[in-house]
Length: 374
Picture 1 (cartoon, rainbow, N blue to C red):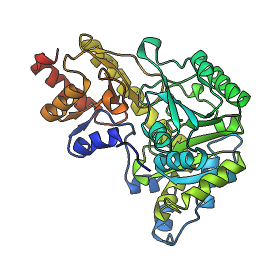
Picture 2: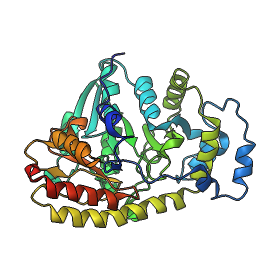
Picture 3: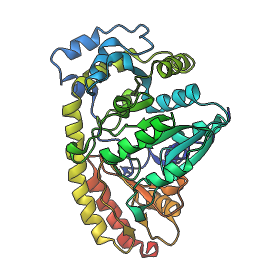
Picture 4: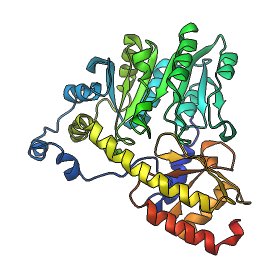
């Protein structure tokens, strides 16, 4: 397997842990182990006594039961626990795609959603969206680009990096098209729970369609990226068997302490996601005011969901050069569109961290003293 370098991770490797202000993070403010254990009386004592042997490859039964509680109709037997969302993507693509398959992927988007398929010899068509169309998915385009060799449609809602969120009607139309052509729907739902209006939360694709896989993780809406716990959900027993068997060649099983803590997080998912959502909404108000002051440099579209947005930037040097200058001179880290292979005219802004007011103040200072950026 030859796979392209992961551009986001290579860019972050240079700056993520040295820049004082992460203004592009996709996750929300995290917490300590003690903070999480405090959600359940006696959890700290139970954690200290937790056995450090191997765990079940599918995931601890107690964890899978807690995760199933996030869904209406899925059971623990429909869930496979993974090492973060990345493993879920990697093992699904490897288990379900073969050379010559055609895959349609929602774009711009998380690189592994298309790079892994490409590395396997699949042909990928990017289902491109634009800010001019409010990042809306074009169903006519989708219908026109399904081929005899099309095997999978990959969608992401709530969407990284744009903050787009599709309607229930659009979700059902995508699934209807997939069912009509007997296609797999791989639904990246890692931001499920971060809808700015909880009433807009979509059903999991795996609950609506027998040939769908839903991807979840505790990193985003729960603010627990350090646990490295994600999961796949599907009602298709053949898909489940293939993906679970491929996991034997990646992690085999998960961290026992991580699964213990993840079980608490899954049981407390409503409180944790409400905490993250409140922080995002408060920070969004600050971003509205910030971008209103800088309309000459940015075109801002308030996102409908998620902890990220993707404003257009009008800096003459382009998004990547601008982002590098900002992090080197001001210690504020933005993520340029080049890391998404989406031109050089957008930056990802993350607004799930508590120190966003300080980051914006530092960014404002930079813009005031660097008129050449205009």
